[in-house]
Amino acid sequence: MKIIYRLAQIISYQYFKIFHRIEISGLENIPAQGSFILACNHASFFDPPAIGCKIPRNLHYFARSSLFRGPLGFLIKNLNSIPVNRDQLDLGTLRTILRILKNGDPILVFPEGTRSQKGKLQEAQKGLGLLVVKSGASVIPARISGTNEVLGKGMIFPRLGRKVELRLGKEIHKNQLIDTDVIKERYQNISDKVMSEISLL
Image (cartoon, rainbow, N blue to C red; front, side, top):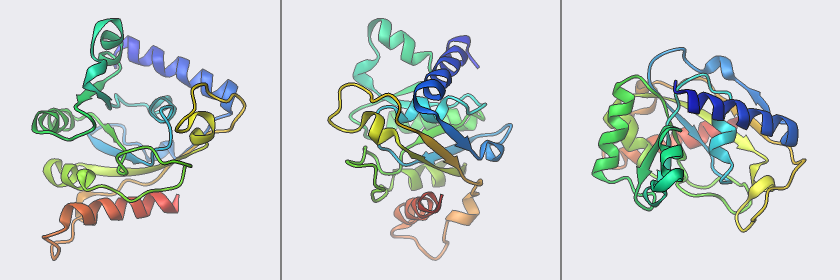
């Protein structure tokens, strides 16, 4: 784990603990080694730092490719960010993700693909299912709540004092997600199963 990344974790956790009374449960479900996909709902730009601030692994994130410029680009690159073009999973991005997972590192994925308006769960996109099939990685479902009230869509400044909670579920292995009888909608079916697990947290 890079020093910059670890320092960012410490600062992020202190911020969320002091100003948003963050509560995190299920950390015991995070494997000590090996790759996995951390799949979480998405309600705010604050979700990535809130989710990753106590995960004891070298978690990787997605970020718009346009941000990888200048000092900001240097910073987010050292925070394990993966450049994506308008949130589309193109071939180059897919290869990068598969390489990261093959190396034994985890990644954070938002199955919904975009932030929700009011923190409510949305339908999953098929991208998560594609990653599961191509990588063979297991999935850990997670649900975050409160970040939409801290910095939801349309908000410029965060609201201090609003509580944030993160719940991490148990690891789901590939063979538990792939239905061998379903071929046509396999990717979507996997994403839907994970989204269902997230809704139960």
